[in-house]
Image 1 (cartoon, rainbow, N blue to C red):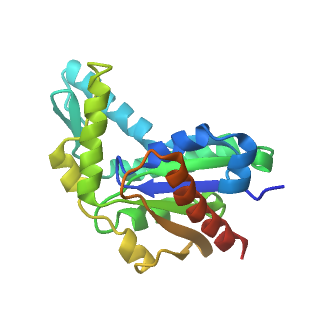
Image 2: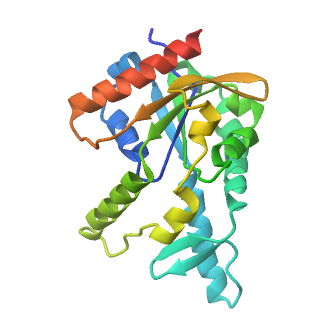
Length: 240
């Protein structure tokens, strides 16, 4: 029986390839996904969903004559005004994951929980990972999908333009917000610039692999090699 991850933290800049990675996994047969990528039947928790809810709640507060709490609005798009909201999102992980998954050990017999988020700034990932509860972090391995800021922005614009072809409700993170939140991140500092190894949080050794995701590709052969190599190495680290 193939070894699979319990919790896989899927990290990286916005539009860096996290959603494409998950889409690839969804299209992969269960047996191959478990054997080749060490990911079983999987669920996804993405904190962007909760972030967007807060932006929409700000719209409602504004409509009833109150001040917005977390965001400012640029046309149909939003910018964040209170970075402590990122801490709130981690606490949502800490609240929801134990209730929905850890309390149901049968999930992990053939299941993997993908936990997806992005953080920028000088201490973004360190603060986020430090806030994850011990019961969540101790079951986790980390895949960081690495692209430059300019590549992240290029893909963000391309994704927005593609959505516009199908819906007038498409949204995009403004350049000002992207630069403010994600022009730098602390992943290289946190890992000492290593491509793989271990991070220590709450006394647990958390295996990580940094996977380069440039140039962009939709070729399944290229993606199989890219994902398979990274996740194979990550499972080796986890198994030590």
